[in-house]
Image 1 (spheres, rainbow, N blue to C red):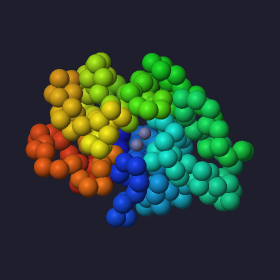
Image 2: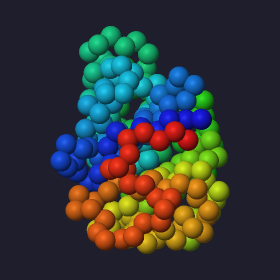
Image 3: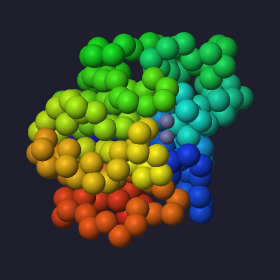
Length: 222
Ligand SMILES: [Zn+2]
Ligand SMILES: [Zn+2]
């Protein structure tokens, strides 16, 4: 059983008091931040005591997914956190890493690795820069930023929860809602969370009954 808290759900830039992609996954007392975009640090404070995440997992290095990774480390540095913060990425974190505060961990395509109590498998998406989706504990699957490709649905096979980044504005780099509906149906995903939402909304699409918008829910137990 894990608890997923949505810290921010817009793609590209924050809007109307809500930040960009950032999620908090909690299980057995372990708190994992999955992406940490603009506004994530302030949103995090509402859910866990100041800056106290146990690890950060990044899908890719676009700013809407990483904007607050630096300030999270500054806050820990200035407030006497002694433990290094493990930050997972697919390649060197470079300037995202604050020396002596964050600790770089690398994952590779197709690799299964553990972060605390979570078992995570990374799979490469289709995006202008290298980006990975994650299968977590074999039942919660994050698409993260990806366009449609053959084989994407296979990663969602039988998922209890599918978290899909949508951004209708740029179909080659992101999923259209119509594509998400098709994938979820094909893979038999029990529940779908639509996130990475466009500021203008998704338009007048009719969503299946098992779909929920990240703007309509804050916490999902799964
Ligand atoms: Zn994005
Ligand atoms: Zn991106």
